Length: 185
Image 1 (cartoon, rainbow, N blue to C red):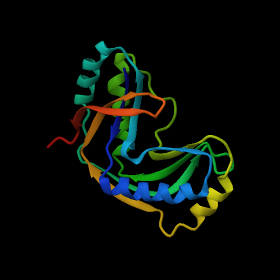
Image 2: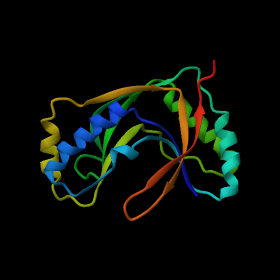
Image 3: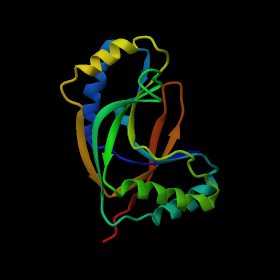
Image 4: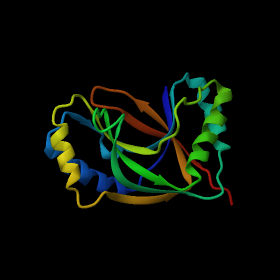
């Protein structure tokens, strides 16, 4: 099974992102857009694991804790690797100071199970789409330049989720397997 750990988004953030994507689609750039209903903030992509690892993963995630909820503000747009050669369009996330340590704690909890640590720094972002080619990039960047607002909402959460991802020609399908409250009273 293919697994990842993520934070859920509020419906208000999803609606703002849905509106943004609708506007940006008018540029007709060659992008495969992410469906807003499937959007989440990935904290750890686990990948393909045998089903017998599911219970140890659940146990490890059950021990993850933070003294307070995570606050996230969704604002500004960016590109990976950069604006000149974009491969991914994303929304930047300004996060409370406890988000990066929470992601690191998940890495540490899963490592003894043979799940490799990420070799890149954790960069919180919300993927909007992946460029298939450079067609329409200039028009898209013009559309982004005239946006009246680049604030897409905020959330505060004290829970993370273990998701299963099933790939299909229509796109990935995500199923929540379990909820893990991480704020301890």
